[in-house]
Figure 1: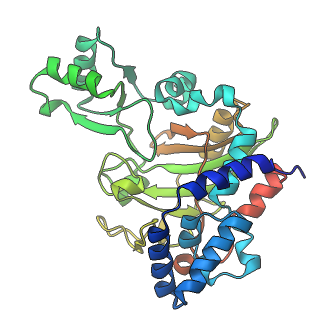
Figure 2: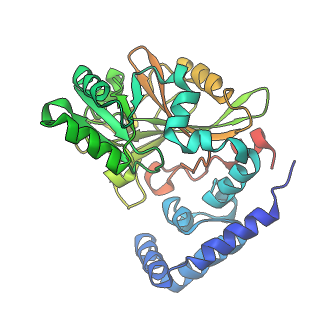
Length: 338
């Protein structure tokens, strides 16, 4: 097995150490201790030791309930510091911009978007008006953004001055307009007001695309299903079934969707075989960016690509919610070899 570059690890740790907010960390430790009936100083010490020695981010420690896991169970969990090392090693820096810039991404993966889109320039006000009126509602994005930032939704019926609308988008840097994706009825039954994406984390080894983890995200009616918009997620098994209730990084647990009443544990991702084949195709488009977190949506006719994240991030089980006390790291190790 190939070892990861210790220099990357040290740079990551140094950067994190410089940003530590001691007061916020103490508060996080106290809340964790109260939740699991532990002693706060012991939790704080364990969080610092886990971060420095075991590559466990502070939020990882909280989200994945490390306070109640033993050493062997903890070792099965993927964490953000380890994920960062994989990204730095296996995602070629020369091609990361194709994923980071949403316009470049759309151009690169155009056959897999399966929806209409356009870029906004100073010369195409009339084209923009036609695009928005024809679609009724559109999603407009800033080319550079993450976690749902820079994503906006506009309705044609709300626009009273098309010249000002076009100028405002340019001034705010909202330069990518897209047709709203129509999602599969199964997804719409949980939250019809948000396009609910599925995160599929993969590693392409040059011949085979390995699916490392799948998570279903659920929105709350906003333009994005990210946590910053009130969204949450549940991990999926190899059959596309939710492993339990939904949860987020803010301590919220949802046995049922708050808006529709649908039981999260009953969710099953539709058209899983199509999703698997689709992901294999998209993972081969830029084969030098090998470790990616793909966001896709299952439409009534098949999967649709939303975006790919070269810095894949981590989605994992939460033991206190699912009762599952192991994570996905063994799958990562088997596929990648580290």
